[in-house]
Length: 82
Image (tube, rainbow, N blue to C red; front, side, top):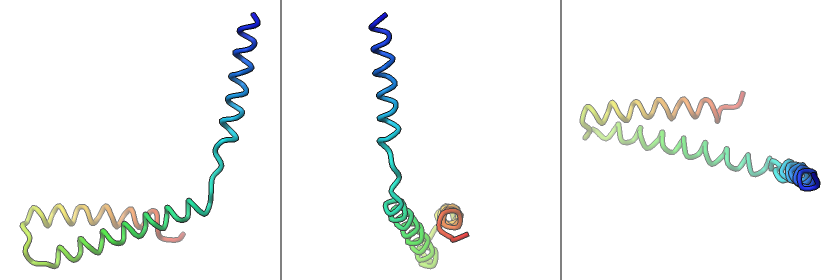
């Protein structure tokens, strides 16, 4: 019985410590969001430049346009201020 009570106490203590462990850092989150937006914007510019190169196969163009739509949708979802 003592073992069960001790185990329960340790489990409760561990849960309480785990809840206190994580604290969101707004500055770090803002930095990560800025990095993600910069990466998406850079990828969009790269795709646009490659599409304008003129030396592409039809399947490459379709693949790049498909990827560009995804990148632009992600940029609109995560980076444009609401």
